[in-house]
Amino acid sequence: MAAAESAIRGAAPGFPGFGLVGRVAFDSAYDSARSTAADYLKHAKNQLSRWQGQLIEGAKVIRDAETKNTQ
Image (tube, rainbow, N blue to C red; front, side):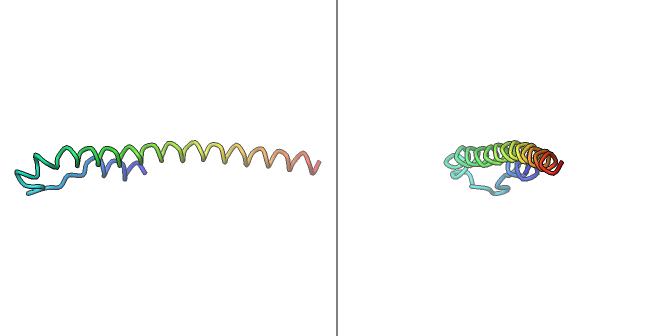
């Protein structure tokens, strides 16, 4: 996810891009869309990290309950 976020943030249309007229018309929209997409990936990565922690904690609770149940 971090690599995808970085790739999106660094993405550029390259030469000739949108051309002279297109540059004025589309550069701002392109930058905004690129930043928004990268931000979505950043937030998704953070959410997955939280879920991972919750799953690990949930597995621990289940293991502990199973251990106490079999004693």
